[in-house]
Amino acid sequence: MHGFAERLDVFADPDGALRATHAFSLYGLPFLTLRYRITRS
Image (cartoon, rainbow, N blue to C red; front, top):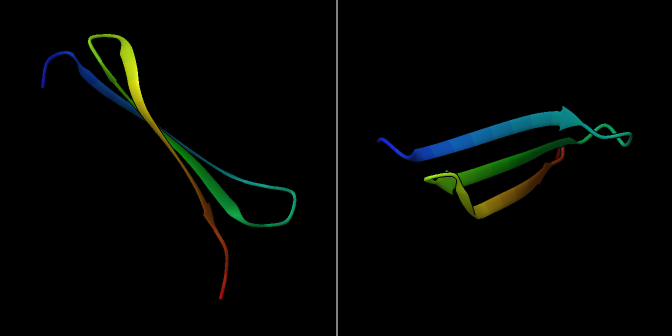
């Protein structure tokens, strides 16, 4: 879709958990950022 962009950054934090930042923008204007922390059960 023209004008829509997303960025997904995934990295490990010092505790060993995976973290992700998922950012969305529409025509260059950010409108939603989601942050995840993924750990083992």
